[in-house]
Amino acid sequence: MIFGKIDFLNLLPFHVFIKRYARTTRFHQSLHYHKGVPSALNREFAMRRIDAAFISSITAKNCRHFGVGIVAHREVLSVISLPAPDKADADSATSNLLSKILDINGEVLIGDKALRYYYGGGEYTDLGELWHERTGLPFVFALLCTHHHSDELRRLSRAFVSKKVKIPHYILMEASRRSGLSPEQITYYLKFISYKVGVKEERGYKKFVKEAKKKGINPSLRKIRY
Image (cartoon, rainbow, N blue to C red; front, side, top):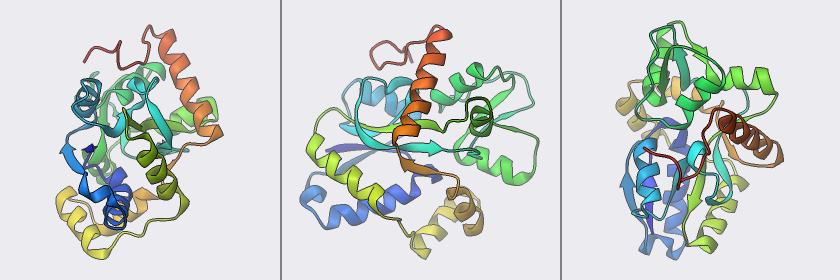
């Protein structure tokens, strides 16, 4: 299986989990990584160059998934809009559309660079928090999708959400060096991220799809132009 890997901090617990999971199953014999930012992995997945990945919500409507995603129940900290001239984030698909749905003008910033800005104390609007204020629902930024290998991904998904993942100190320190954030800042940020997509999260996702259609965008891998 070729697995699309996003090296953002919001997926640090999943990367720790999948290494452990692969060592205890035959999964490691076929697991290969293909790294990229969300928008790039969306394209690779659509072209079937990778078998599974966390796919941006805007393009995941018709994808097969098993209840795992990147979810913010209120604030998210890593998807923000800055008080600046309108500018989309080239790494993102879903977050750019979310800012339009929320009628927020400004520069969209996602991922680790958004976290660095947040911890720097600048002015911003948290798009996850604003979505919750207006809808009362969580926001699903991505879904763990697959083209095939369904049985394996189902087992993996269930195992991932069944227990809390503890991040080893050395991995936390490595993430700190890579991101420019302290281990304490990373640990605090991860408290705002969850991964189980249950009933309420599905409602939030369907609400997003509905609002996207109102903007004239049908979230589908086949119909989105990159």
